[in-house]
Length: 268
Ligand code: SIN
Ligand code: MN
Figure 1 (cartoon, rainbow, N blue to C red):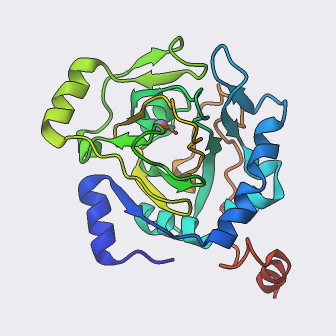
Figure 2 (figure 1 turned 180 degrees about the vertical axis):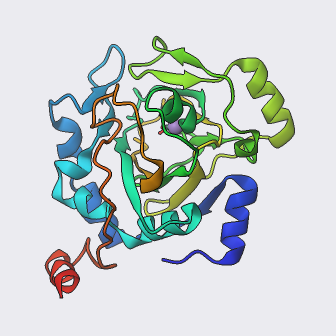
């Protein structure tokens, strides 16, 4: 899927791009059929919320689930990443499904992903990004992602390592800085049905609130990085900060609903 020049310009200016209904309901049924099984697993890659059994994040799912393995190579996700990052050679720095579980989903403090990629993983430059696919609807109540538009233009901001607020350590930004950035750029929270995608820059400041609703807000994230920008410190497990820098090879567009045909097509 190719982005138009206008969409590319919008990404560059605002730091994100929201595209509703990129995947069809039958495709979302295939993916969502897997999710309860993924979160039910007891393995180190599946992180629970602090003080509860509710799933928070399932990491590296593309290596232990066949359906998500296909999604990780989907052209509707990987091709826009290649366009934005300006390279055909991208690898998966991180792949995760965030649950933001009904009633139990906890916050993600304000942060830039590149702060963590730089501080923990020694990623040389911010030429990496996220592509999020809404598995469930994201609405104004269930803890949607919040962005500060244009904050990616500030470069990497000073951050502190928060290891206490939630079950997952994160380099977060102080309230004074967030207040200043919000005064300049405001806050947006793109909302939409399952199948919508949200692309955002590694330096875009973002957060999400807790989920007090009966609606889980499942989102899958591909964190794509250029192969020539690979990380240089291997402090975190490979399932959080991947050390396999093999370029992603895209599958045909129908790989979710017609996997046999898609795989055969790819080999021919
Ligand atoms: C993240 O910032 O990595 C996740 C935020 C969310 O899923 O709400
Ligand atoms: Mn993030």
